[in-house]
Length: 328
Image (tube, rainbow, N blue to C red; front, side, top):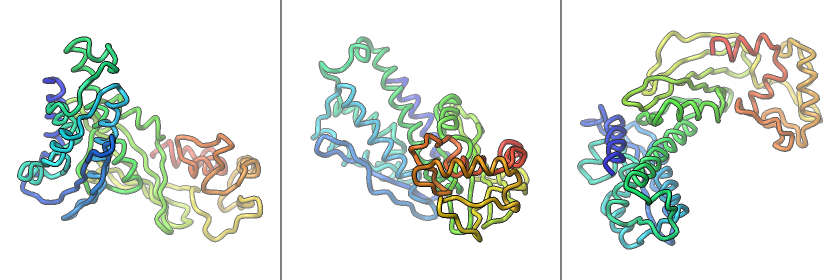
């Protein structure tokens, strides 16, 4: 278990660094009942949002439930005793976790439950896991890494299109971080009334093997033909100059879709008639049509998001390259 604790200590120091003496706090809790670990009690205070606490507790519950699927058994009385002691409450601020016996991250919750004997292997546990101390430690380390990566994944999805007010959560490796980028695509969208935000991630700082991601956000107001790109580090601090780029990626707020659910050709937006024709055909072929969200039955969804997929279909190739794959 030494290896697993080393992983947890590294992550704990990263998440708590700089937090002592300050009181912004994001928190959540983990409980056990009826054979299931569940997450709840998400909150944020003193300037922190609830995203960190929600991601931490949901990642904890998800990984803990995976032990049962792997053939482990949970002693309900021991689990409830450990979690109710304070371990089940996870806090982002080290002041709260140290003074009030709260956990600092999902790994701590998992480790304390394992150490107490609340979760133990059975005859249904794979021999591959329990055949030696080395194999068992490797398995536990994998679970702790999965908890951290699950949390990093969840908090990035929760803060898409905006800068988080919670502490940064790194992935356990560059390959795990790259997998997130590959899975979700470099462009993700969020809508804020008249504003569109498109988020892109790239590998950022690496600390003690843990990989952070930098975030770029392209913001477009209404049906503007330009957008502004801002880049942020893992702490949400903007770096580099803001850049204004030309874009045809807009909501076309002053137009009305036709009866087939798509926009007619308009040279203000559609510089390439051929590409617009492809877009129109695609929308006609969609079972339900709809400009913002293509039908799931067409198989046209992509890692660049449904909205981005539409944009690529009606934008000229040069506009797409300049806007999304050039400076963005």
